[in-house]
Length: 260
Image (cartoon, rainbow, N blue to C red; front, side):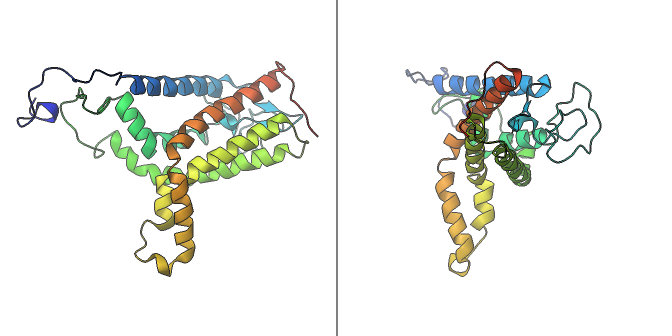
């Protein structure tokens, strides 16, 4: 190797690392967390049932918006402009690819899976297994530059999720309504704390004093941005919990706790 840790001017250390602590634990936990979400979300997206509770107006975010004639009656809040879909296409296919792209290209998730999945590097003072580095200039990593465009779609989907949550209150107030609302609030927090959102608000301004409104927005988003990592993980959990709750109520496994 003539680059990376094998470059001529690097110290010749045969061991991958001299660290004696459990440096491998954070990458392992990250892999397990991401794998849990991918398996659960993938299975539920293709399940094609138990995603809509007509009595209470609960629609899981994994199937929103549901725009095909394959959707259960009442679950298509924006009509059914698409025909029936074959079983191998998830009912939420309109939004899911863009949301996946938004998460995959997220600045925090890049750091997380670069270190854990690609081990580039897995931890400080631990040699990575790659002999070269081309950055985000070639496929597939060049797609990371589309993050800001995925962000625009994520904004639209957040509005749709908000509508879904608000619609559930027209049937009264139940635990499911609160679960959907909590999830959408946290999703807004994750979306608005995005680095692209912060840049859009004030990243290209040369004089904040001339743009007080955008400066105020940039300030608020910057405060959220500090919590972007926590929101990234929290929303993965709330998405699964929200879907799980809707699935259990829709399947009849549990009854929704009603308040009003």
